[in-house]
Image: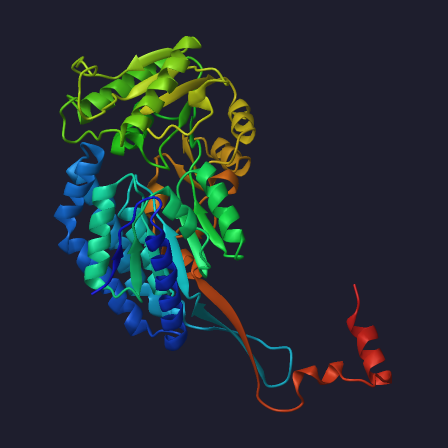
Length: 481
């Protein structure tokens, strides 16, 4: 079954092929109409089956692409979490599909909203969790009855090749297809006249994607990132906050759109936080350099980018605290690992405080009053997530209600993204639109209004001239304050 398109950056054949696949999928969508719940469940079962069957290959491919990637972390994030999303959609989609009925203002009228498929959804998925951020969104896309064409990242070629083979083994190209290629192919992909386009990646690229999609007025869902802050209250346990923050900051070596990007600690508690963070990392990773649980940086360009952030911060006068439990030498290594590193009080103009980090580096800032933190967050682009640690409910509400972010987790990090009943998405510079659970079903559905008039008088009779005294009296009585 299926079809895979393998192309180089300037492969005109791949670009022609993707247009052909889109036309085939659109024709199939029109012919099918609104698909049944049974068909949608069948497709979800196919994705679940292929994901479970290929779980070991998924771990191998990601380890190959990264140089080293924790096998267990891959199974958690790129298999277990994906299967959970798909099963949740399978369990609930019949309820989601039900039309909603409403009162009609006219005699014997019936008003309802039916949820119809959009048609063909294009998906551009990223390199950091290439299976999770491709297959989990499919839960909403399939649950809503759509077909899909996927363009995975060229930065994870082994994973992209495997994904293409998996999809081709389970789906015909008129159902779900994968397009492989470089940046030129991606640019052309974003220009296709999809019925919806989902892009997950960086803000800079998202601007190009949105501009290209606008050529065909294609609606977009953008899942981006930004600099997600952590606010630690005076009422918080520093040890608990440090353990939870460092757990996520070291997961996938911090190459996560939801990873904490900087942390605000109460004035006078920096040393306590550094000690707690060091203890937490040493507990998780007694060694780092050859530890299979500690993931590498994806490629040399990103490795050098992160090193430049550290060098820039060091030159600005920030204190650099490398958490390296066994004092291992990282100057000679093939796998591009970077130890978890705290950057204490970097200046506002440093690279590390202005660029999304996407690595195991964590700036630590101090504050005296929480309003300083609120002002700092609000003076910058809205992040994908905000994290607050503390037991002061009044302060918690002040931080939540006076800042803006895609989502919030209180007294933990990233946990809101695992709850299928919560919409997941950004706001402002961190994205637009959301998915997960029912939010994904709605994002990839057209809420179609249907009005049915069962007998005369017809609804529009009141619009029909000539207008007499009766209409004038009606309008005079109806148009009131």
